[in-house]
Image (tube, rainbow, N blue to C red; front, side, top):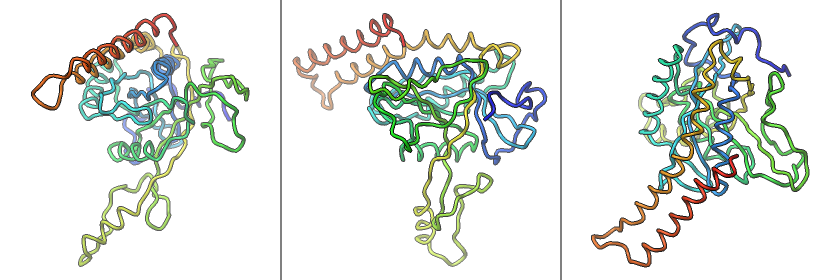
Length: 320
């Protein structure tokens, strides 16, 4: 495989400004600064999954293929209802706020910026997306067919089993090696990343191409609504891997936005602290009118202090 982007990918001025919304996504290019922020966020907690949104744009290459470019991220705070060791969710409010953040960043850089994807971590799990990840990705692609998903497998140790997929090939330009395999030793932790989209499979097991609408009605005049529901329920989604290219931030654009992206690392501690504070304040509110029991308050306070020490002191003294 090639070790760098094709010349047609850069500079952006030579590319058509508005790619077709129904084109299939063929690749994704991520700046090294954006990758560093994503990795730091993924390594911030070992027991729960984290999530965030990817900011960049979609461009059409000379070969009529669509490429997603990511040069910044939007760190998202996990709500208490969405905090889990195996599942993350992005609320519509968070998506709207990230869209406004992308617009402000675009005005600052003088380059149109939008939300082009999302990322989340798989602590102690394989990098392969689960059926929930594939379904969530399919939901986002119904709004934007170029939406991309990244998964970071962290805190993962153990021997690599031959034949088991561990993520697609990552192209690294100019020796920027953030995703170096540590080998097959049992005591070596590995950091792996994969980019994926969802592709639909209809009731007959046939793949649904990207230029075909995902939410179509097969009901003919005279057919019942139950027939239409049975057709839509029978359709499922599977993973489609997308090649990744990692580019040094200084060479991503002539005027690199790497500084504004790395500033997100300073916000990570605030987000971790806000998550602990939000969970603590919610625990003090009982379902009834009476306040929580005193022992419950003491226990929740101790858990809150422990969480603050872990998210601030431990993260500050031993950054990822």
